Picture 1 (cartoon, rainbow over the protein chains, first blue to last red):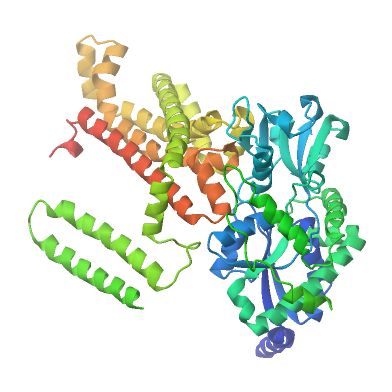
Picture 2 (picture 1 turned 120 degrees about the vertical axis):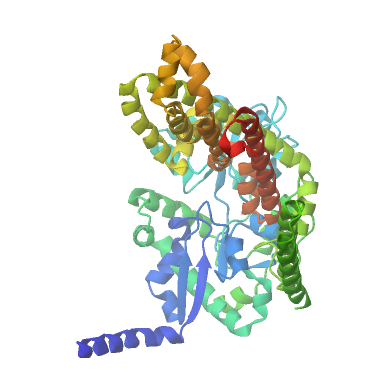
Length: 328
Length: 278
């Protein structure tokens, strides 16, 4: 008996010993475990993090998780977040800095019933449109303010319906348009039996009103810690390796994501679809933030309108230090 | 550090003061002691948050919440109208009427009592996070779906209390009414309903807070861009914790007033009951 315990202890020690030497990092995702974050799960599963001597923990998000809060509270070292909400948080007093931007383009759309007859945003007046809140409302609100359309309802404005996390408001015609992501909700609408011919999509990216999504962010003051910066460099390198692998092998990446989905809520078909769509968004990025795209996002957010997201151009809200070291 | 120490000093001082006061037999102590306690709590919160440099996105100090509350008052008022007056109160009224009708039927017909009460219990066991999205699907994004959630939440506590209240008369009392040749309605109105009032008000009071919780939580699952639940959820996402707390303060005030109002009516209606005698 005692011998067994000793043996078990020795075995545990043997496993734990290399892990002790690794640098622990915790990543807080913006949303639930799904292929939107495939790169990180692939890097974990394929041992890319381990090869960089990192012990990475991935925390799934969800409707009740605000990633910046996890950073502020010390529950996570790195978060994924959309640039608009991260900049709003930064101006609100939590200095977060973008260290990498694996997503080159935005997947946000408005999906509308074709028979509503919308040809452009001016046609939205007098109609109801579903929008996500909790930081995801900024791109739409800015677009409307750029178009000079009120969001307070009535004949000359749009009525906003605070959309939950499903596509029911569109299917039940509670709204003529809802917010969708190319890789997620749009697929759900199609899965519900709606044919693409019945829909009109307004793609934020094509309309020139897109904002950057899903960047990697850390707290500014921690960037003065050299050991932390060093582990971030290795993290970004391994993560990008994961992303490129996921892009090239969508089905395997989807299977890995499914393995990590503890809720069991995701289906294989949907994850494969999501991964193939996600690959289009990450394809143009090597991980380094494109300053021009960042400036465009800031410009969008500062549109003169009823309620700008940020009031001043953020200084030092991104850095190339990590990606320069990671990618060269 | 100084602020943290100051907080401890204030805490000890206020504790000692309240201890001394509680030994006095003056009538005003009952009012003053809780005020001192509350003020101490707020002061310690303020000083500790500042002294320990707690980030505002984890816990803002009360002064910041107060500033934000005053600045956002017009918005919060609109939220209050949407959530409390449209969602919670309408659901409360519908729930009370429904519970009364069903309770009277259940009281009259024993088979209903045996059949309906378990169903009511089942209804009350449904988790609100499960029913709210369904009601949003059925009744839309406006206040109607919130009212429906509230009805589901307040119905059972009211039903149980009213049914129990209606049975709270003794056989002798009812026999006496019968010897007076009183019919069902006379016995109900003159004897059984008045006797049931303490029970009914118990249910009504429990339901005030349930109604508010139901209306707020239901807004998490889809709402127009107004309402306390919407404000809490939307502001949390962009880490405007001072706004979240302001909305919480607003709901707390509304909930206390609602409860207090019902308690006042109770005192007027059941003045004869031992619990209300001075």
